[in-house]
Length: 615
Image (cartoon, rainbow, N blue to C red; front, side, top):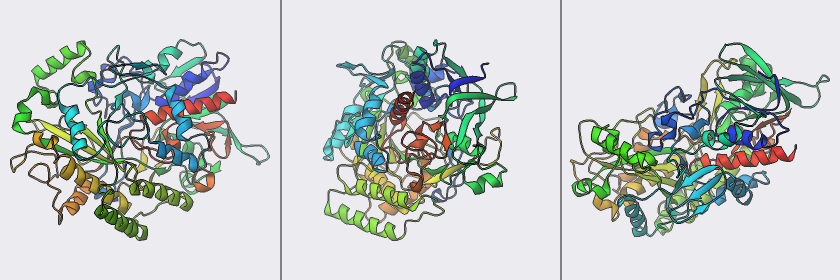
């Protein structure tokens, strides 16, 4: 193995492979990528879109748990993060949702010049090409498709939004979605396989002699050197790593080390290297190089609850309203049909089956009653937000709250993010997939409800001085801000009492005491949360009992001015250290409106531009 490279990239995930590919375009620059997991680019569980849940909780997943979550009644919740070449983009749901224009502009207004919507959308466009039924837009390596619409579910979803007076058909890449939208999916239309950096960016770059990739290699820390006179910044010299043979060795970075280990592990590597809260580092026996208490803080994530409704008998018998439930029950005939369809690049295995979405404002915001409800909520939570042990810098906390309040008060901005799914989709108490009830043949339709812009902020920190110790203290503090509970409960109530109760969707769902549903939901089918006297409290209880985290973590190495709680500057440079950058979702100071994958591509492409500009 070579002992030095120009750039050493820690993490061969989504962002790391993009940056490595772009940097290695210059043949005079040598690049090393170090990935802890395996190369599973040929594994069917990675490649077949409909099998996207199969790698979760496997050896390709870091498979962690949160600390007990006070806002969820003390429950610990599963945390999935990719531990393989390609990272979480190799095992996620492939939904490609760009964040909102207002969200990215808010990043820039926090002191991050060059990270607004106008600039970021240009960087993102370098990452993907789009194929629709009518055209193909050539751009970057990631292939996006608008899935072929089968059956009546897509039009039913649109028509239900229209019946509620909401926009029914939005461009999912516009940055200004309000109402229904059908997301693009990261699937190659030619091969019918997942499209991610492992089989796109990497395919083009891997043959380059100036790019080296080490898998199953764990980075233990960044090797830092302090100036001999004790003045000025420390300098990143390389990294210490442990390979399959168990020996710890070092590799030198002639130019820079770039951390791209993800929202949970990038701050962990910083702390193991002596960059973080001095009190924590000292307690673990780690010499303090840079005292920055914001490392690992500002952990944000979307929280979500799901509602699964049994189909009405006529819809269940109608092949135009088919679901994936027979496939989920592993019915032999359904499995055989799905495999036969996939050979023709069609059917449930050729798509994610969850690209129907809704981006909705605060429920009732366009009515006097709804506006009064929100005004009362904002007043109550201003006086008693309910957040405990929040180490966020006060100035950033104020800016964050100002942004979220702006979203809530606007009828044109989304505070709720919904998915429509033709089938059973539920999570158990610890946030893992809950198997569909066995022994039956009933079918389901699910609406997942996500809080688009939570105010609850948590943290992730190491628990020992050893990188070999997999324990991380992951504490997202889900639903600890009172406003999060209230807003999510109102969106759940809207999904049940309005969306699932409006035509034509309402006619496809069973009602009455015999109707089946997901855990903790009221009996009787849609409308269980509708009662004016009790519905809202039932919804509050429901979200506390059922909410889990989406795999949309952000914020732990925030790109902010240091006085606001920043870890990196707008050039992604770690404060207090020369030749060290972070380039992944951990630098996002605010969570995105939807899934983070599209924005991570934009961050990686933008980061590569910045680094290359300095060569």
